[in-house]
Length: 316
Ligand code: ADP
Ligand code: MG
Image (cartoon, rainbow, N blue to C red; front, side):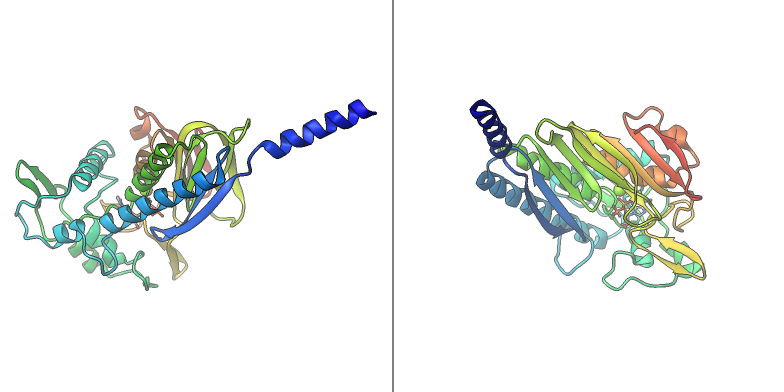
């Protein structure tokens, strides 16, 4: 009896000694960003999460084209057509990556749609409830070659060419957040920015469990995943920022070829090594669902729900 009591106490102690998850959340980049740290000291985790959140907020301020705060991206968007502009190294690097993904995605992902995105207005504080006119859309569409890299800096080649990092900056911010957590000695964590996730390590002796949202049934999970190590999972969907006008859904992911919301998918989830790549490619493949061969040579895994709600590809 005494032996049994001792072994039960040992079990209880073992359960108690595993530290609880440390959680915190902030509103950054227009979404709730949730931080979870496992297996680490509470005080150290809190300091690490605060530093990661501050870094993500800094990135939002540096890249956003909305709000009153000035930044280099907004200055570039106002710069004279054809003039060379120096951009800070961080912005220059992300722009170069974005233009590479534009090329690799046959133009589906385009970081120079700022004018068009603003016209549709899904990221404005008061988003419109009906689509702009075809004429206004045509006038806001940038030419295929829009942004030029020169030795002396970057130039925009037409007045419609305006940078908008909305489909890649959140992923980049998540990656930087994870890097900051790691620099603070955190080995097991998740950053979840409104369903866009990067995780490291594990959840105690278990993998991390995450759910991919069903694009139509709120609160329903279309697929659960158990992941560990270092993985990013990002979803682009037509259900986050949208309105219905005359029975038709209009949402914030635009097909650069037409200037209208892309209409081949309801959601595209991408698993990749970095959240930046997963973010950009989930947007790119949302547009090119009709051309899935684009993803063949990329080191990514995919879940595509087409515009009829059918899963047409699943390599998650
Ligand atoms: P979310 O911001 O909901 O995670 P995405 O990552 O797909 O979704 O990014 C959508 C945002 O990216 C839009 O709000 C807009 O700013 C911008 N965007 C829209 N269409 C494109 C496109 N074809 N290529 C690059 N960016 C786009
Ligand atoms: Mg994206």
